Image (cartoon, rainbow, N blue to C red; front, side, top):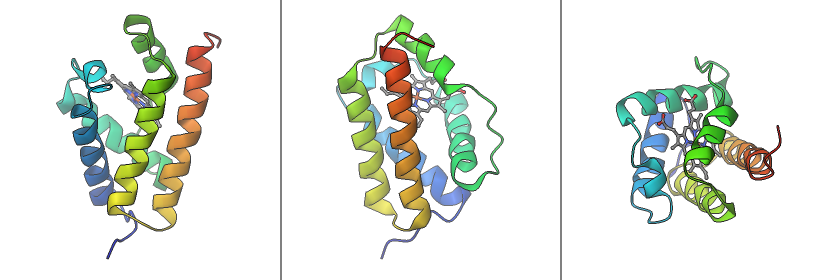
Length: 123
Ligand code: HEM
């Protein structure tokens, strides 16, 4: 039986499983080819802990990071669509409950705003 995302342990598993899918995905993998995973993974654990439990120490600016990424390797609708698909698929594969639903909602809303702001080229 699936459980909900109860805390840090499940979040780390969720993030690791999501990036396993990203790294195996022909469309997204090239965009992550230069990522320093040892540095990036703890940032993502903190980001999601903050998004779901309001306790993580994430102080970054994802919009700024992704604008910088877009300037180097342009992102398009297909990239965002695939990112969303893989994230939702990963949550559904392992978890169900209030926090699992919240994780999917947050991923979709942040992704939609990011996509609009980055692809429209505005602020
Ligand atoms: C087309 C979709 C996306 C692509 C290709 C993408 C790719 C990346 C890459 C390459 C990095 C930099 C990793 C590094 O070198 O440190 C990054 C960082 C990050 N991404 Fe994404 N991303 C996407 C969408 C999203 C979405 C929708 C979210 C949030 C729900 C998100 C959250 C983050 C966060 C929090 C960071 C860390 C930023 C920081 O350093 O503070 N990403 N992403």
